[in-house]
Image 1 (cartoon, rainbow, N blue to C red):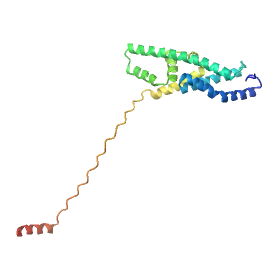
Image 2: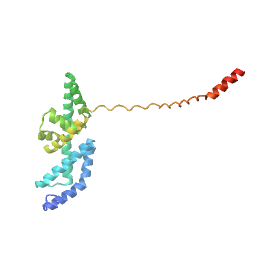
Image 3: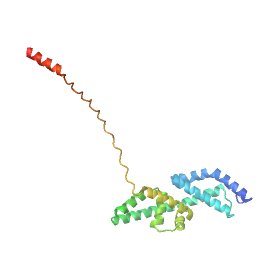
Image 4: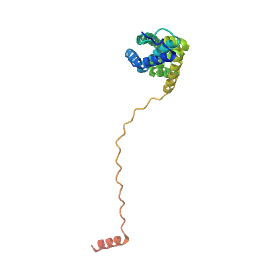
Length: 205
């Protein structure tokens, strides 16, 4: 069977592009069904094809549809292990903060971390709590150091956007508007002649 490794560079690139167009939706669906998170599935799928392209450039073994799914399964294994470590790490953080009364700032940080998506929270915890380098965090997360930097940049921005954000107040139901009272009609003042006539009538009576 002909693989992507055979032929000229241009032919290999063309075959890889065709493979990507054909198999990317299938690999993405395969990963998404197992992680249940669209963004995480897209990142893992992108990593599958990045590894595949690097393999093509280095002249490694044949990259086929089956190879893509095997690679995706391996990355999923790394992802599951990372999730387990993240859960344990988050438990440790929570336990430590429970034992030591947290300052207002610590509580705000923990609250913000809880509100972040898992993909952002994990890379922040590995980088800042565990002090791992990008390469080390990449080994834990099953991606390259360069991918960690990209994820860390996005995670920092997401954290900044949420940190210190005031809680949105609940909308207040507007009270029924009170209809304005009808304006009081001014009392017409009597003309002097009318007053005199009225007094004369009273005297005659």
